Amino acid sequence: MNGNSGGMQPVIILPEGAMRSKGRDALKANIAAAKAVGETVRTTLGPKGMDKMLVDSMGDVVITNDGATILDEMQIENPAAKMMVEVAKTQDKIVGDGTTTAAVLGGELLKKAEDLLDQDIHPTVIAKGFRMAKEKALETLDKIAIDISIKDTRTLEQIAETAMTGKSAEKASKELAELAVKAISRVAETGEGNVWVDTDNIKMEKKEGGSMSDTQLIEGILIDKERVHSSMPGRVEKAKVALLESALEIKELEGDAKISIDSPDKLQAFLDGQEKSLKDMVEKVVKSGATVMFCQKGIDDAAQHYLAKAGILAARRVKKSDMEKLAKATGASIISNINDLGSKDLGYAGVAYEKKIAGDDMIFVEQCKSPKAVTILIRGGTEHIIDEVERAMEDAIKGLASALELGKIVAGGGASEIEVSKAVRKYAESFKGREQLAISGFADAIEIIPRALAENAGLDPIDKLAALRSHHDKDEALSGLDVFSGTIQDMRKQGVVEPLKIKLQAIKSASEAAEMILRIDDMISSGKSEKMPPMPPGGGMPPGMPPMM
Image 1 (tube, one colour):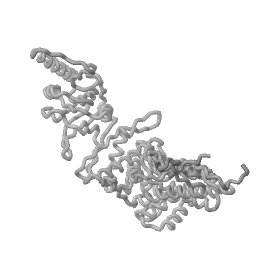
Image 2: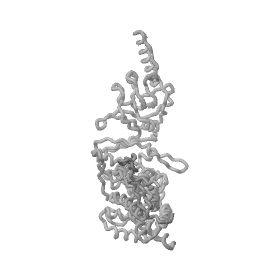
Image 3: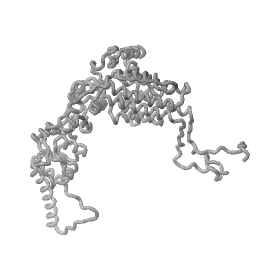
Image 4: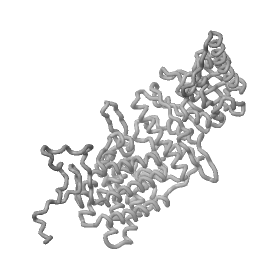
């Protein structure tokens, strides 16, 4: 070939309908999408943050200011925006709170990156600067953290209250915070100087009716089931609890097996035999000394009758997760074969009773000796209120678990962010050239949290940021913004504290997502052709196919 490509057709390597944007265009589009996610949830941050109402295609309504819930319900499709949604989801999964902080921070880091790109700084230089700044930020947070232990009940209540501020549950936050701390202290495990909490051991049960302040902690487990037979006792004191995994029923014949019965006597004998085996099963339960029984599978009608005659309170088709919680609360063993049931397998509860709540019968298993699983019964006027109280309680409980896991907390109200920003800015001075600009950009981005707190409270963000900086320059590391009075206060004294783990995770995931988006310089999205394009009339080539050479 002579190098003259004038007559050549362009080579098409992508399917028809594929979109491609390269270089700065791709980067700018991704940054814009990710920033939009941060902007969406920014107004929900802090005690004075607003709520969002989300209506799905079925007309179901969710009213919340929980970052992860908002982003999840929005069903965002843009690939870059999805990465920011993942940041909020990760934050929710790992620490349960700080989802809005993480999303807002990620968006702001990319906003600063965009300013640096406009100054012709290469994306990899920005990403490297952000990475170094992130390490410095994490190190600073660790330095300024305050130690706490599971005995600091008041501090733990403050952590729970801080997690709930700004949510609809705030009106009853004091009572709810006390419940959350009590629940955590019941299920916390200690060993080798560490405390860890499996939040799955705290069951949340929701029932409409009453008000938020009627929410209660049950020292045991609440099962959303009713007793299987009306003649069973409705209340059993000093209950001995049996947990059975298998069914109290006669097994069906498997495969094509058949029983041939050729006379009425044989039929009667067969039925009597079935009844006797059910009676024997119940007899084993009675012999073990059990007075309350929970069965994961079914209970035959005849077996129900015999259990009722023996004065045993029984429930069937109890969820596996509830069975496990009952075992932890009462100390019972879950038995898979009824022949193995003995008195040593039984658990203890001070009382087990059936009670109607909001029109539904539920079984309460209470007053357990040292329950390692408890239930919080959430009440509220409407379904939306209950859902939001549940989200607030989850934030509080997961926040408490995170605080106890590391045993450290930091001051809220933007205090820790200003301190981190100050340290990162000082760190930037030790660099020359373009990295210094990227590290300084990170320091500026961290200040979005106190800025958003001030904006959402209707205060002047520039004035408040300047006031916060001057307090921190005087080494007042605990000074934060009191959004209710609009003044700068000692956040530790005000009781505005947050788990260190929440802040660490928010900075880690936000900066890692920002770095990842900065490294993308080519975006190719395939055409949505699920099937082959139709052949054109006359049997020519389908559109989008490269020409045959």
